[in-house]
Image (cartoon, rainbow over all chains, first blue to last red; front, top):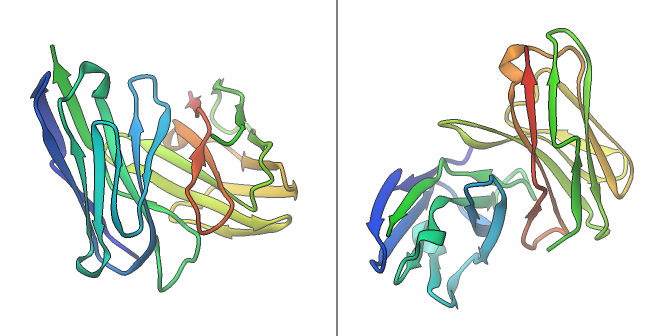
Length: 111
Length: 111
């Protein structure tokens, strides 16, 4: 099946710092999403981004589908950004409409 | 966000007993999914449904069955619970070819 790798696995930031999270995938995808899992376990949609670049406030994401990776940028980080960030992909060549997750990046933003 | 309700939110059960988790959605989304989340594994797909009475297996389907008798409800059944099925279970829905939305999760402990 498709492999989804996220890096780094863990990240510690001082409040106000910027960061880049990466998601690599091993096969062509129809769709890609970024999620934030907050400390209470809730999965929150950040971006639906099969290709191109999107921005939402301090967060932005870029997917380069032809090179099989996506990046999530967090600028001016805040303590509320802490949690785990997941990317999920829907393979293009099989298993239509099934989403596969990476293992996540655990972010800890310190005040 | 889609209106997705999981029940129960927490459950403790004994090894060997049957358990059913329910996912209810109010958005008329065609596709529904059950995932489990375990430390070090991210989210793994158990089963999914692409329509009423239409289901398919995911990555970790052994020991689980599902049913979908109407659009809004997707049930996950553990026929005979084992300790290895202690996990957090998430339901998700999507219209298809669009972003997926997740319920709040069910924490299941098998003792």
